[in-house]
Length: 195
Image 1 (cartoon, rainbow, N blue to C red):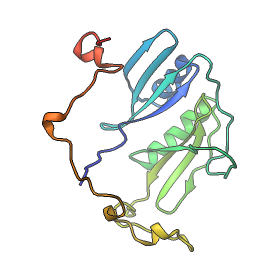
Image 2 (cartoon, one colour):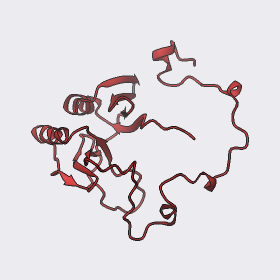
Image 3 (spheres, rainbow, N blue to C red):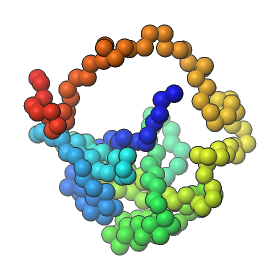
């Protein structure tokens, strides 16, 4: 079975990389660990944890998104509501709340969701963000909970993956067939990118 180890990076968009760096690095404290770029294009990465990053593309005509209340249903095409970042302690949650308020960013009260305590805010790009701390003694990863009174059919099948629902791989790619192609960023670590 595939062993996932976190979110390598979540890629977002900005029209103001300076403001984005000031918020994510200087206010929230996430290290700026990689940056790719050329005229009209940038892609910068911030470290969330030892395994997870958030990245931003800077495109010249991107404007901040209109702020939408976290979790509020919408109609029409829509693919993203908000992202939640875990924090180690309840103290961290309150420190973030105070830092956001001191920097004049809207931030919610602390909300109890049963298994997490959360605050909600928006970054300068209008991206809806949440910060969450796990309630002591409750871990839905170890003990899944489904309290939906009318869960969808797939959810009624339980927490564990049901691989038989998809076709089996009949011909796995052999290691001698593996080929990795250079892309944006390879020049940082392997010399000039091949044209």
